Structures are given as C-alpha cells and as structure tokens.
Amino acid sequence: MSTMRVVDLRGAPRERGRQHGETLRAEIGALHEAFVGLTAAPEDGTPALDTAAMIAYAREHAPYIQAATPDLFDEIAGIAEGAAVPLDTILTLTCVAEIRRLQIPAVRNALWSARGCTLFAVQGGAGSDPAVYVGQTYDIEPLWTPILFRIAADGRAPAQLVVGHPGILAAFGLNAAGIAFVASAILVRDQRAGLPAPILGRLILAERRLGAAAEAVTAARRTVGIHYVIAAPFGVIDLETSATRHAIAYVQDPVFTCANHIRSPDLRDLDLGTWGHGTVVREGRLRQLLADGGATPQVDRLRACLADHADAPLGICGHTAPGLSTCESRAAMIAHPASATLWVCDGTPCAHPFKAFSLVREGTRPAAVRAVP
Image (cartoon, rainbow, N blue to C red; front, side, top):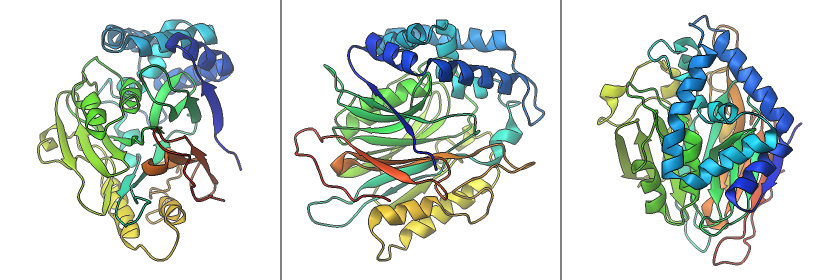
C-alpha cells in the first residue's frame, strides 16, 4: 500500500517553485503529457480539445494571477524553471479545472456526470479539544498523482500542509493558524478567465482568520464553479461559488455534507444539471453515516465513513467502472484545525492507510493527536 509522497518547500516564492519543479521534474512532464492526451482523445466520446486552444486559454489567466497575487505567479514561474519546461506547461496544469469546463455545456458531460468529490464537516463536543473536523474524498482520474506539500511559513503566510499535484499548487489543505479547506466541483453556466482554483486554494491557506479565508474567495475574480467548506477550530463556513456569484453561510448543524450538485437556491439557475442523482446519494449517505456517532474514536469513525461503498461503484469511496465512471477516489483527507493536523491517504480510502501530519499551531504548543494505523 502506498503512502502519499511528501515534498518540503521553503524560502521565497520563486525558490519554493524551483524546489517544487526540480524535485518533481519527471512527474510534471508525465502529468502534462497525460492531461494533454486525455483532452485530445477523451474516453467518453465527447469532442477533443485542441492543444493550442488549451494553451491560449490558460494564458488568458496569467495577467489576473500576476496582478492579484504576484508571489504565487512567481512560484508558478519557479516551478517552470525548476522543471525545465515552458511557463505555458505550468499554466495549463494550473488551469486544469478551467480547461476541463472549457466547452461547457458540451464539455465531457458523460465523464463529469458519474461522480466527484464528497465533502463533510462535523462539529460539537465540549472540553479542551474542539471537535471541528472537515474532510473529503478526492475523485479524479487515476492519472492524477496527489502530492503533499509541506510549505514553511514566510513573511506573510503561515506554514501549510497542502495536497496538490506535480506542477499544481493546491487542491485542499490546512495551515498552522488552524484554517482548513476542502472543495468539490459544481458545474455552472458562467465561466471566465481569472484566478484558477489552485490559486484560490493557496489564498485561503495564506489567511489566519476564518472570515478572511472566506473573503479570499468571495473577493477574487473566480473562474468556475466550486463548493468550498472552510473551517477554523471554532466553526465552519459553507461557501458555494460560481465565476460571478456566491452563497455563503455559517454552518450551525453538527453534521454538514455536500457533493457536486448546487444546493443554494440563489445559484440554482446556473446549474447545468449534468451530474445525475449520484451526487445526491453520496451527500445524503455521508450525512447518514456521520449522524450515527457511536463509540468509535472520531478520526477512525470519519475514516470509515469515507470508505463507505453504498451505491458502489459510485459511492462515497468511488472506483472506476467501465461505462459508468473514469474516475476514482484518488485520495482522501481529514483535517482537525484545533491541532493543525491533517490525515491523508494516497488512493481509495477503503484500501489505503491514512497518515497523520501535524504543524505546530501558531501561538500554541505542539498538540497531541490520535494516531491512525
């Protein structure tokens, strides 16, 4: 059984990028080639995407990244330098979510309709250990190799544990201030060039307050539809976004779950309706499991919920299936913001071990956390 590869990054943004690119040079080249091949010859029979058009579209995002967050643009440029590839290669990987939706509504409806990520937040309890946890399955084609980046604190941002890919800054993660986020795709009618999803993920993790982390998303020029769940040690924000609109709420319930359909009435007119009903099943099934607290220690119980196979092969823990889905739960995450601890598994949570990684919480002593076998 594999465990997720860990890459340590430190220093100024350009230097962090070079470390990333040099360490993962071969993997970046292989992933870019595989992604181009996937879009040029999709398995689901939808129209191919022209490579030149992909590059041109990715380039449209560059001025927005450079203007809004020049440090992250420097990091992207550093990745390209370290990997010895054109900047266009890293921009294309950075814009994966945007490129995959480029031909909406024609874009890969069959591929997208089967499954996607499933998110949760649980909160409650008493005492000195606030029981706020967030987590998710991470559902995507098997070619996407998750990498855990341990990013040292710099002059502005706290230390971070970030799950991304070779050449890609972030998919989800947690920082030493106790801010964590998880995210799932939603398909909406509005799309534009702006700040791609990995940029927004890193902007969230640069913040030390829950409100500021949400504002990093709502104030940004967004590109596509993403459902965020953002947590701090004391509470959780539900943030559903399209390129041009958003719906935000402070989560009051002990258990919150979501998947890939649009939940907010304020955004439903933007819903492309291409996911099918499996997303409703996964959201409801995960809520059902989490509501049954039982006596199992918290992290072990959460791990078991993410490994559930009800409605297989398209359940919470998803697997590829000919004619049904080209995706699987490629990774999973559980985060405990109060202890700045992240549990991740490299592969389907039913068959791969979770490993715990902790940061020293800013302003506290290192926290003790439960070990996960």
